[in-house]
Length: 170
Image 1 (cartoon, rainbow, N blue to C red):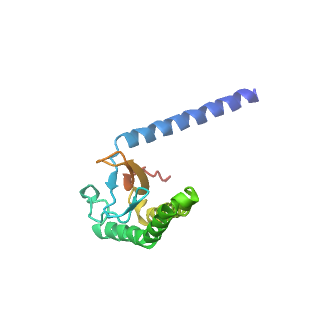
Image 2: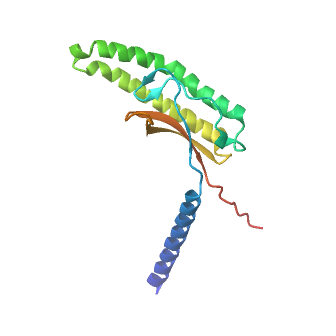
Image 3: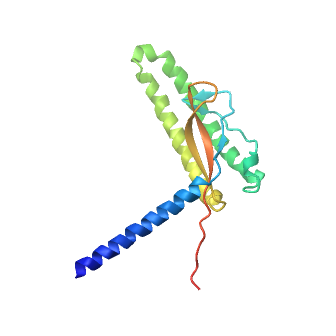
């Protein structure tokens, strides 16, 4: 008798999860395409440009203030300004010594590039928790194929999060 009760309870949980999943998929289906902020610098190391475009995208009008967007992009560009010159120096040294070290001289620049990406991801997550999640937006660093060639580049994607109604009991 008790076994049947447990089975019914488990079936109800599965049905609720399926309904939640279907509702979330429905919300995402009608969400607008994410806004892509591309690199606009003149130096690119392993797909990461030395600066991102600070022009306010028209798709964000009414979602976020242009001043807030510009401040966030300036923080990202400041992080890149601090880290990328060191990466470029290590890349040049690694290329010069590549033949003598059988390629091992490139490892420092690879590690530094990973560290730069991680620091950018942490900064974007901080921006998300500070402001953008409250505005139903989500910023992420994403690797995308370039429009002009087959190379890969890092871009900032600004995704629109679905507004989930909050039900408060009376």
